[in-house]
Amino acid sequence: MAEALAKFGWKLKEEGAKNPPSLRGEPETREEIDFTAIFQTVSEGGNQPAEETESDQTGNDSASAQEEQLPEGEEELLTQEAVSEEPVDSEKEETHIFSKKDTDTLAVQPPAPLRRRTPKPSNAPTVVRTVRRPKTEEPPKKEPPAVEYRERDYMPIRRARSYRTGLRGGLMYFGFVICVSAILASGAWLAADDVLSLNKDIVEAEIYVGEDRDMAQVASELSSKGIIKYRPLFLLFAKLMKAETKVEPGVYTISSRLDYNAMIHAMQQEDRVEERNTVMVMIPEGKTLKQTFQILAEHGVCPYETLLECSANHEFGFDFLEDIPYGEENRLEGYLFPDTYEFFAPSEPEEAIGKFLSNFASKMTAETMLNVRESGYSLREILTVASLIEMEAGTDAERATIASVIYNRLNSSSYPYLQIDATIQYALEERKPTLTNEDLEIDSPYNTYKYTGLPPGPIANPGMASIRAAIEPESTGYYFYALNKHGSHNFFTTMSQFEYFIYSSDFGG
Image 1 (cartoon, rainbow, N blue to C red):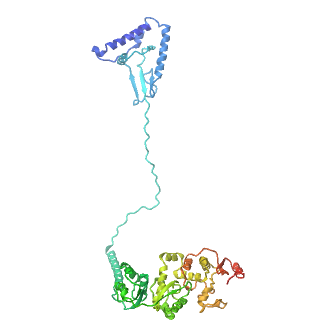
Image 2 (cartoon, helix red, strand yellow; image 1 turned 45 degrees about the vertical axis):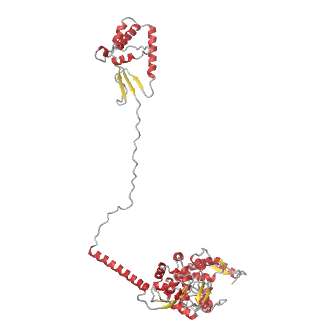
Image 3 (cartoon, rainbow, N blue to C red; image 1 turned 90 degrees about the vertical axis):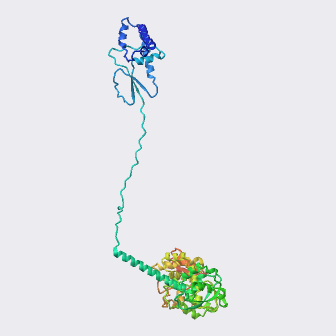
């Protein structure tokens, strides 16, 4: 029976391959092959031998093994029902129905090993082959970054309101412009009067031009002697005209009737006054105003009394002297900067004192004045402290330490008196080698044993080392100091330490 069935199957394949419907002129149709009818027809011939059944079973096993070996990524399912138990995705699964045409196409291919299948019952459905392809993973969608909302901690900006000035505002603005214009016009007129010498009092004076051709010194002399009114304006004009390269050293008679340009031309060699004798004078640190004037008088620069009167009443035109009242002989104490000077012998008192003040002004740089303001004290107070340091210090190394003792006492409620002997010496008519108890009781604002705080003003003319120490004192806890036998000072924090030292053999006072 198996042999007849095989022959019948091959016969159909050979006829289909040799004479397909397309060659016979017949329409191409898809007819389902009814294997059940064929099976019934062949089965009438007899039963299948046992050996064939075993081979059939072997073929079924090999077919099953071939069906299980599918390409990677695909899955082949053979179902016995028309509808698969699992849901099928129509987009990703393909279903193939094998018809007669498919069978004819397969017959052209080389014959595969014979595989016998068990016939299906008459009501068996059509074989469905389902190919399931792997799903393609879609790329992850990028989510927009999360927006962080914060609570606003400020008020919303409101649109600025538009205001109309009106007639009143226009009149105020017009008046403001008129006032500013008048001020500027007045200033310009005053400046022009000084530059062009339009309406100035007639003044004549001798002006000294040094070897260094320092126009700042020349401007100070012109201002102090009343020839010009605005010293900064003359310096600016001299800078623009490059006066330092034009003037010549010497002494010149300059009149206020000359304008600025004529003054510069007048300070040249052909207009020079005949030569006068000059002297070099050295003023040490710590000298008082009276001692300084005595030195000048001894060198024939100017009479002592003339210098005192000029110092008390003359207007020198420097900003640092504006708040100091006129009339006192020691008005310029602390401002006569100690240095070596060259004077004419004789000289006018304004000219001689002007040299000291000009030198002091050059030492007070912008940085120094800024440090003075940051210290919390005025320039005059700093000079007063510096003069105390100058008179008390034995060495440069201890100046800042003495300054700390002074400031500690000024800020102390336990030791409010400075008790500095040099202040009493300044109040006396003549200095004494040793002060007595009566001297400590004199009624003078310079007596720091009797009056708290700083004295009314400097007691000497300090140098830059003492001025720097007064501006930047050392930070200590000392309230006492005493002279030792080596010419320097020992410092103490308590009264008992101080008293123990002054009764010891190391005390040098």
